[in-house]
Image (cartoon, rainbow, N blue to C red):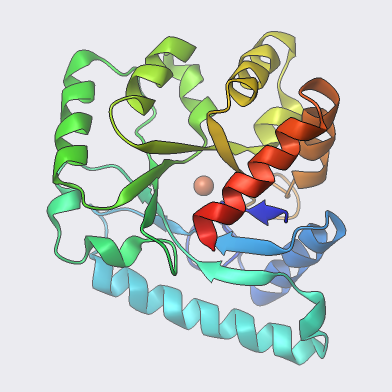
Length: 239
Ligand SMILES: [Fe+2]
């Protein structure tokens, strides 16, 4: 089963899809890549909005998208949709009484985005405190993106080993990485730490879904077993 674990397809929720037409086009692109299930993960920023308000907006956006899918008359053609959120780490967030409502639908998993910075010791201790107060499981969004802020693969592994943490990697990173970066990504895949792939698609132009391109590269460089293992891990996270 091919699952897109990270997407900004819900219309008018964030800096992703701007209309239901664009959302439909993005889903059609994912169908071409044989993606069966899409987790809808609009950005949630605690400093900008409370959880109740975010959920209300998300529900309205989801209803619009479902109606647009119905209106195509080809509902059976579209992937299964699962509601989620890409939650930006803020130290106090795991104490919020509504925190668990940010879990991916039907699971105990939160897709967590870390700040784009070097992970110094003070960040690490904040993160450990967050995990200690958190009674949900964490999937780290686009783990490879933190390599751009002076963090090494070992720095990332230190974060991952702070708790029972699962990692998602972006398809576009795999598809577009240069030689040196690509080797780091394939090392993480071969080490078995990546359990989910996400397109992190925002639009059909500058950030289209690149699932098929990533699948091709993983199969070529890490082998069919590596790709199949990620698919299986993803399925076990959701169902
Ligand atoms: Fe994202």
